[in-house]
Each structure stands twice: as structure tokens, then as C-alpha cells.
Image (cartoon, one colour):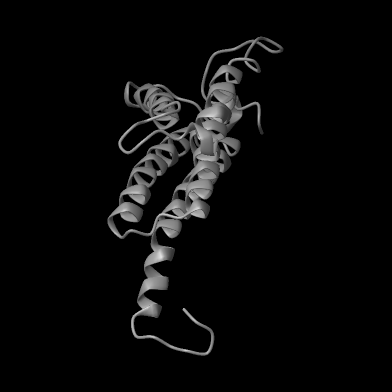
Length: 169
């Protein structure tokens, strides 16, 4: 859009560019909600937050490609949201979640491999992108959903855990 000149349809086009970023923001919020829920001892809600983040993460890329509004900012913002939602949130959930552990045991080191594997997968370098339809990187949403599904299965099978067992409280 040129300065001082209004063209019909520019407002709609600008709104379409915002749509994928709003969906990515929802994914980032779901990851933050998962971290906050883990901190408060609501591990089931934390796991659900990760699953919701995965759904929104799958949706934002499709919307951007469908509307032809893929931008460099959107790619980097999606990488940041992926790191929080699928790297930090599941690691925090594993660390603070409902699991038997002894005081001063290895619980602090358990989430480190997940987080270490998630960071390079979420942070994409320009020279690492493959061609059209080619996937380069680690599928960290799948790993995060696996962690979340194990927590949900734990509760589904009758497990219990609350903030009283959380080392974060």
C-alpha cells in the first residue's frame, strides 16, 4: 500500500495477514497456560493445554498457506510458540507433574533430554529449510502430545495428583 493512497481491499488483505499470527498467539497462550497450570498443580489442565496448542499449531500453518500470507515473521513467531508450547511446557509438566520421586533424586534431570531435543527442532535456521513438501527438523509437537497423553492416561486410569505433590508450589 502506498502512503497517502487508499486502495479497495487493502484493509481485508491486512486482516488476512493477522489471522495466522492470531492462531499462533493462541498456541503460545496454550503453552503458557500449560506452564501456569503445572505450577498451580493442575496437571490435567496442563496436559490439555499442550494438546490444544498442537491443534492450533497445525491450524496456523494451513491458514497461512491457504490465504497466501506466509511471512518470515510468521515462521519465526511460530518457532517461538513451538518452543514454549512443545518444549518448555512438557518439560515443566514432567518435572512438576504427578510422579513418584524421592527428595533430591533425578527428577530434575528427567525433562532435560526433551527440552534439549525440542530447542533445535523449534528454532529453524534459514539454511535448514527443505524444498516444497519436505520436512526438516524434529517433530516436537508429536513428542509433546505424547507426554501430555501419558498424563491424561494417568488421570483416566484413576491416578491422582494435586498441588500438594508438586515441587513447584
